[in-house]
Image 1 (cartoon, rainbow, N blue to C red):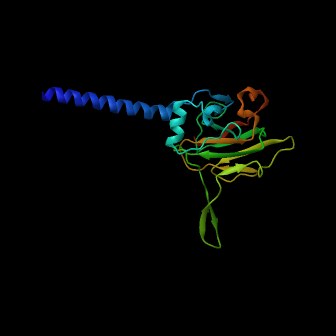
Image 2: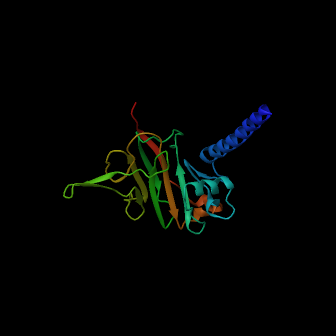
Image 3: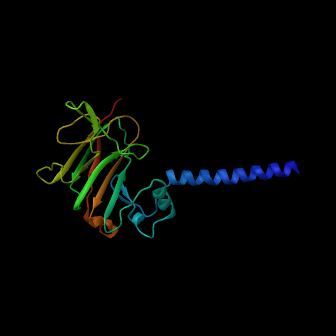
Length: 203
């Protein structure tokens, strides 16, 4: 009798615990379906639609995210540079390429937990350190003569367009395009996204 109860309890524990663990692993490690890849960047156009896959829907619910709808835009993420190496906050990168085909775009860096990487800006008069906006946007970036955008991603200030990404550990770059033709994967050939190049890293 006791043995049967014990075996039943163990079976339920393994079933429930294993099921919960597999779901948690899937949400953290399994990407959404219908990925759209351009260079090092990846997006999931169906995320903001009724046809989104269950993993993406659960991931957005768990993170209290509000995905962009197809008529609003598309969000691209990159966890590796164009050489295939994981992005690290200790390293310096250059994001360089054509200005994305969008009415408005933003670029920011996130840590391993998905939080925007912020830098406190010291104000000598008030003696306070207040966080600077973590993202660059298309209305403030400087463009080259040929229209290219060059952004230095580093923990130390850089001339020109600079995106702060200090600290240590893995990071992800997030490029959000608003009112863009890329929202339809059928028009992906019309859009070029900037390359991500590593320019320095501690040995």
